[in-house]
Length: 203
Image 1 (cartoon, rainbow, N blue to C red):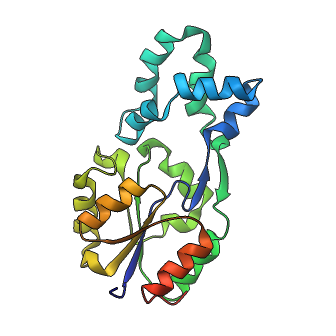
Image 2 (cartoon, rainbow, N blue to C red):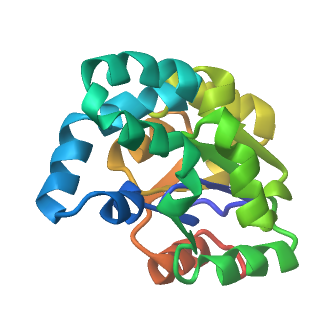
């Protein structure tokens, strides 16, 4: 295993705790109804359009036409976005801070709506101080498309074999490895710390 010179982070549920259920349990009476709404109306497949750069106002138009009785709930995905979050994933603020203190360059590669990145930087300011962040909504392409890893390689400018990437989704890790990065599936802060140490980083 080669030593790493930099860390490339996924954001959602690696660094930041994001769960739409956190919002919709406030707005919908039963757990079953929450699951039905998130499984059949505001689905992850629908949300991926935001990650690809489609504006939320545009993306919700057809959905509201299809579900006019749920228009307020659909609109809340945008207007109450902040309520889906609960700060840092446990243990990750300290890990990011430790890497910064050690002078290790940190980067982001995230499937994320471009219009919501300012909120994320306000919520977790250290992310705004990473060397660079590749945001899918700005690039118009999402992980695990090889194109976004090519963008990351160009932007980071280091040998990808010297960059360790952590993401909570296995398909994104597999694609990162195919692009030449060292990559591991994120399963929590303790495992991440051990992974970074195994790649020679002082954490």
